[in-house]
Image 1 (cartoon, rainbow, N blue to C red):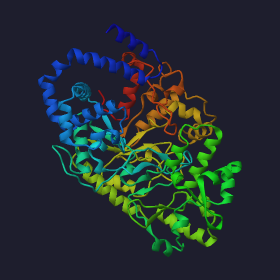
Image 2 (cartoon, one colour):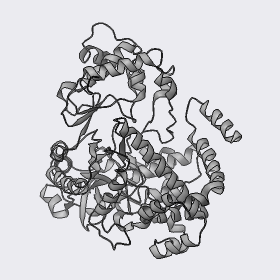
Image 3 (cartoon, rainbow, N blue to C red):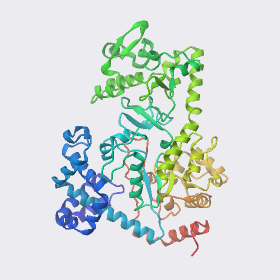
Image 4 (cartoon, helix red, strand yellow):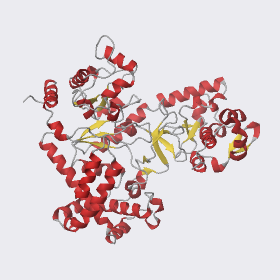
Length: 576
């Protein structure tokens, strides 16, 4: 214990959270404490009851962890005889594998600790809010056990935008909503039952939960597995177009020309410059009319990525990126599950394939493109989301909140309202088109009001990031005259928090960083260390930690009194 206490002091001295180091120390501790106490714990009545209630997920999860460590990979396709999940085989495996006992022990203590924290919070009138991610990891125990619940040949992400021109590829599979499978002991027979079991487990600890990326239950951006970039994805579910329908919109559909990359000498010279001859010789096959096909060994982005793996010189990176761009130079994407059905490629009007169309063909393409992305699916997506969410949420007692930020189809707001799901309101991301900032008084009652989220800059950092935006906020939302301060004063932070507390939203939430911003003596010194996540940075690590301890917060009488007064005056709690 002396060694562990020393390591704890060292890790706690850091301004950031070195979670990898914390994990190593805790893992070593678990190894030792299990040797000392594991047998006694696993023979206790409390553990036996926990095991009986949770065996249906605990046994497969423990087996997954052991197999992952044995094979040094979570890719269960490489697990030989255990590549395909079998409940009987896994029961036998766990009976013969002592390593699973430590995982049982750890999960039992995690369950005890979280349950005790939840019970203590409830005893103080505090509700805990959980989180429901939109997807699961591709190489996870869920996909291993229930491959029929997921489209393993696809990936989830987001289409391109001004921040990410290639879109985002999150990598995890999409849900296969209508695929039942044979049920095992206490195992779900459908994906709806799988969600129901998850909710039932969450209810032990949480009184509310957030649905991450709720738009994914309306429609998700689905990317075929052979693509690295999200540009050639499509919405799912969707209503793809047939060749006949495309023709009715005025565009003569040519499958070979419109669904396969258009490659000609002009484009090669434009993209590759002096490397164009090398690319022609090694990666392309010439065909008629000065056009080229990409060789089969390089005809997907995944194949290109593998070919250039480990080659980081400037020329290789240039050629690799150029080939990636060629492979997405199409007008239509073929639907992976419906033969001879097509989706107009997102942003195809920016590609060279669009430029070779005649003016009449361009007009026809834009008509069908705008119809597909802005008119065709609205009622369909609303119906699909209502059907899924009403069935999923009908049995849970938890308050349901949605993360519904970003560009949304018109069906989202009325569907969430009909299902009594709280929306998320962020003043810097107004739901009304044409506004830079949302008006707090216009927030709907069934909503969660906040100034920022974990994916955004906290309040003080937001204030400093864009002085022009801050000046407009200062003059319009805060109704102040003169030039806005370059750094956010405590009284301005307090005013913003108070204005949110007085808004009409049912729930108002602030991060710890924003609460501390109202006190000059307690706020952090380095405002840039307060940011939690930067979603566009793939190398970003969530390393934020509180710069002040709980004991010090309890002693902060002035701050606590101010917070209690603000909340009481806004009638978000009863006066004492």
